[in-house]
Length: 183
Image 1: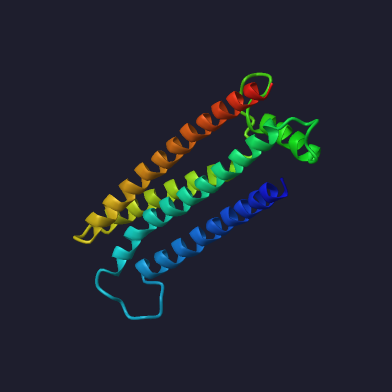
Image 2: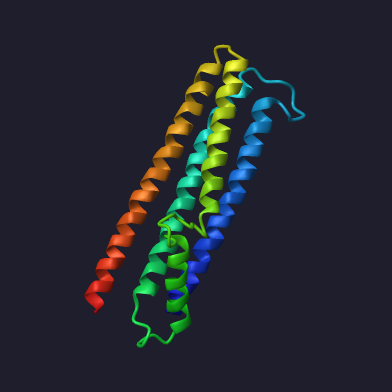
């Protein structure tokens, strides 16, 4: 059980690191693409901006993968029988946090842990839209790939979120089946 807890903590740390890397990489790419560096202007340097939506998609995908790992571990711990568990507090905490992340009495999502996911989506969408706006404002030959990368970034953001939600539902279903087989 202690190994699961360690893996849980490590996944959360790695997810936080990916969020930091997203910020650093996007900032660096933006500065290079917009010419905020001290080097002389290079033709087509703005093509570097094409990478921003893909960096966002990659980091979001990795963060969502790590979130799934955390949910799987949490669901497993919460499905364990409390009487037989030497880590009763972990089991009780996971059951409590499951309620905090799912539904309240009105049937609405509480999403106590959902703000991080909103940050992934919102930042990726805003950055992809910013790339599209930049391509439209500076319309030239190099703007076409920038425009397409922004559009692909928006599509990838929605695809990643949809894939994540489908997997969460599958994990919850598996967890419920596992609990029923335990009884």
